[in-house]
Length: 578
Ligand code: ATP
Ligand code: MG
Image (cartoon, rainbow, N blue to C red; front, side, top):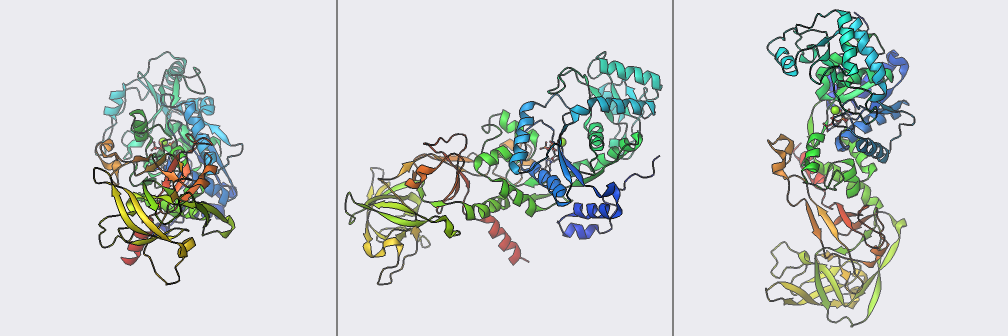
C-alpha cells in the first residue's frame, strides 16, 4: 500500500533510554527531529481532544499543558476539539465546563474550536469510500457474536459470514443503517483488516454503530455514529494536526489510526503516546468521578475535595500552580504515581509570595490578660508578607481578652511541647510575651479559659531588656475585635494512596475529608475579604474565600493547603537515601 506511513514514534529514535532518564521531554525530541527533516513542513499543530462526558480533572490539565505548551514552544497552534461522537453520555453542560476550565488554566485556542460532530458528514463519506475500496463491510452479526468471533490473545478470531458482501450490498445496507431502517445492535460497519491479527484492535474493528439517540449538537440528524477510533484519526487529519498526543492506553490503537489514514490516503498525523497522570489519594477517571457525584459522596463536580479543575479552582488552587505542577512532573512514557504533596507544594510556593498573612484562630480558647487594663486597647504593627516588603504592614488590635488555639495550650505538657502551659511564658506574634498564671475549667474538667499576665517591656513581641527567651510564638485574635466566619478544612478524599487499585474504590473514602471550624475567630483586617481572595492564616495554612458561598459581608474560607510541606520532606529523604 502506501510506502510513506510514518514510523512509530518509538522506532524513529534510538535514544530511548536517554529519554527515559530525562523526562524533559521525549516528545520534543521527536518534534525537533520532524522539524529537522522537514516532515509537516516544520509546522507544529496539536490539539486537546476531550470527550464532553464529564468535567476535566488534573490529569486532563497535564494533557492541556502539554499540547498547548508544545504549540507555544514551537510557534504553532493548539486546537480545542470536542470528541463528541457518543450521544449517550455527552451534553452541553460538560462542553461549557470544559471551555471554562481550559480558559481558566490560561490557554487560548484562538479561532480553533472544533467539534468532531461537525465532521459527521465528511466521516460518513470517508466510510463510504472505505466500502468502495473493499476495506469496510456491514456486519449483521449480533454484538455478542461479534465479541465471540473476535478470538483472544492466544487464539485468532473467526471471519464473519457477512465479511464478503459485495460492495453494492454494503453501500445499500450502510445507507439504510444511516436512514434508520435498522434497530440498534442489529448491524455495524466494520473495517476489513485481519481476523487473525496479533493486535486484537485490528480484528475488523467496528467503525460505525446505530444509536437512535439525539445528539447535543446534531440533534436527530444522525442515527449512526462513528466509533472513537474512526472519528479521532480522521478529525486529526481534517484539522492537519501534526503530532497527535494521547495517553498510553492507546498504544495498540495506533496501528488502527495509521491503517485508516493510509487506507483513505489522506493527510497523516503522527500519534505519540505518553503516560497519564496518576495522583495519590484521589481518583482520576471520569467514570469514577461520575460515581462520586451521582452517588452523593461529594457535592457535585466542583466540590473542593474533587481533583477536577472546577473543584481545585473552588478550593483555591490557582492556574499558575497547576501549570507549574504539570511542568515539574514532566512527560514520560512509563506510568507512575505522582504524590499529591507535590501539587500542594507547587501551590504553597506560589501563595507564599503572593498571599497576605493574617491571624485567625480556628479552635478558640479564651485568654484573659489580668494585668492589661480593662476597656483599653492598642494597635500593633504586623507585616503583611515577610517575603515581599512592598506588601506593607497593617495594624492589629490588642486588648485584655484574646483567643489562642486550644491546641496551643496543655495543662500537663509532654517533653517536646513548647507552647503554653501553666507558669510558662510564650510570645504572642507581633504583641507581647505572656505567662500562664491560672486555668479555669468547666464542670467536665475541660479548660475553658486561661488567666495570664503580659510583660509590657516585650511590645511588638521583642525580647525584654533582661534577655529572656521563649520557645514558642503563638497567633491570637482580640476577642472584642474578632470577626467570625466558617472555615472549611479539607483532607485527602481517600484514605489510601491508590484507591483506583481497590476492588471498590468507594470503600476507601476518607470520612474526615471535610471538617468545619464553625467558631473560628478572625482578625478584623479580614473584613476586606471578598469572594475569591487568598490569605495565609499564620501557622495554619493558605485559605481562599469560597467564590460560591462567600458574600462581600460574609466570607466562607476554604483551606487550600496547610503549611506542612510534606513534599520537601519526601525529597529530603530521597536525597539522603541517594
Ligand atoms: P478519563 O480516563 O478520566 O475518563 P478520558 O481519557 O476518557 O479520561 P478524554 O476526554 O478522552 O478523557 O481526555 C481528553 C484528553 O486528555 C485525552 O487526550 C486523554 O488522553 C487526556 N487525559 C485524560 N486523562 C488523563 C490523565 N490522567 N493524564 C494525562 N492525560 C489525560
Ligand atoms: Mg477518552
